[in-house]
Length: 133
Ligand SMILES: [Fe+2]
Image (cartoon, rainbow, N blue to C red; front, side, top):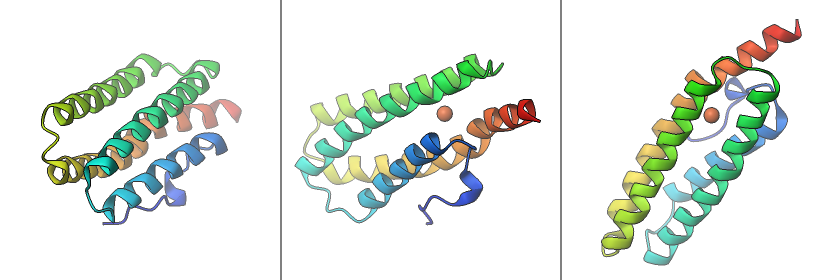
């Protein structure tokens, strides 16, 4: 599975692209990690901090551009945050299965990130580029 950021994923803003690259790097790291307990905890913490910063940057970016799909987009971010919270609380209750958690986090992230960028983030990209013409 290709988990590298590629230029077809560019949303037209350097800061947001850099955030996305960071998320891909995190997935790549997760892919080759030994799923130890401490490692999973650190990944989940970093993922939380990372997405919080990234989502708010992206939300400000969309707001500033008066992007009409903002509400819809916010829902996508919310459901990601909910997924992450579910994983975190599941893992807190069943810490004996770091491998299973690591594997399912990895699979979900790989699917979510590509799909979200290509389908959702591209909507604001197209809108904002259209405005600039
Ligand atoms: Fe997004």
